[in-house]
Image (cartoon, rainbow, N blue to C red; front, side, top):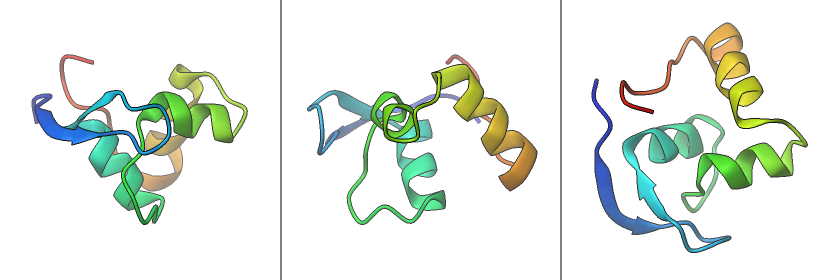
Length: 66
């Protein structure tokens, strides 16, 4: 799966969302999509640690190109 930019924006910081952000938000059951930087910040993690955790526990990988 390749990274795709969406015509949606993070409800926390206003950054444009991509397909990985949307997928990550859906997996974590966010009501409104949020970018991975804001999700990592909420969980007090680095972005790379969040990606690793998502792969280890949920079996999802970031889109190619991130």
